Length: 237
Image (cartoon, rainbow, N blue to C red; front, top):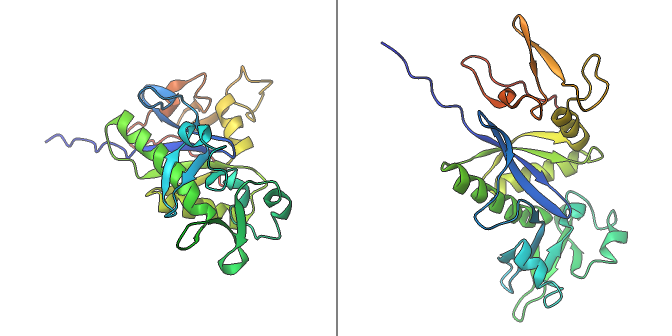
């Protein structure tokens, strides 16, 4: 009796940026950025919140109306993730929306409303962006996506990394790994391997009796899984 191999679970890659974000996938077709129908590959990391504290516009639409709704259009929220109000005092001074102190001395965003103010955490706002990217990936791939690898700046401390994981959880994503942005760039362009002289070379890792390129730019097949041989994972930061 032939046993059919279970299809490996899809894990998307997300660059959750301060200004822009995007989602990508790496499979047998090679690495590619996922784009929604009629959408640009890059999603502006901007969310406009309604008077009820819920997201009413994301990405380009939110950015286009930022002048009309400056106190409710949240951008650069990545700078607030996992930080205290004191930590981001300089950044908060130039932001058009109000940043206040929340639980455990963490920075929060205050949305004024006619009846009652709404206090929203940076993780909740980032989760809106992550959820949008999750939906984009699911629509393009035609299947549910529950796991992601997310890149963060190398200088992010433990609190900021945990805040990123929390944002993923709120978006319905398990963040299986957090990768430093320089590490992600090195993996993408094949830097760091023995004898590497520049981007034209590939980073290789021993695999059985041979080698496999981790530079998906040069070897798209590095994305494809073989039974019993999943693609190599980048090291923990």
